[in-house]
Image (cartoon, rainbow, N blue to C red; front, side, top):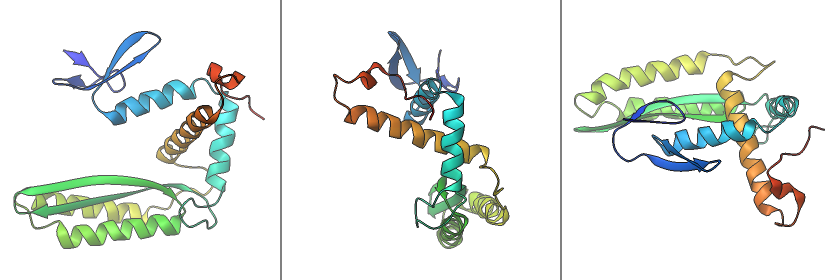
Length: 184
């Protein structure tokens, strides 16, 4: 049995392939592959640079409305059903509290309107997702520091920006050696 190199789940069929340092890797999903890549890249940065980036992102403006922060992760749980097909998901967004509340309220309304129409999962999952979203709506984030989920999402943004920066650089420049810039 093959296990995911990121989360350790058993992969029965397929999986997503990758490689690092010349050794083959296997992941259960693209999400696990991306999480592994983020973790691997994050280890190249000085810890103080990561903390500085997260603190500035948290205290900065909302990436959605450009309003004042603090910015944090706001999860919204939703469910949609039609006869025998039911789909439920959780989508977290980095935003200010007002944008996060708007996103959660939309997911709540959508679930209440469209979640019930499937048997049996619509009837089971709608109360679950509605309760989870209602709890998230009333949970106040700590304005002094981001949640663990928010911190992870901000680190992912940092790594994606770093990769975009590296791709934009000319191949002859020293940044292509793979080393992140030092903390300033």
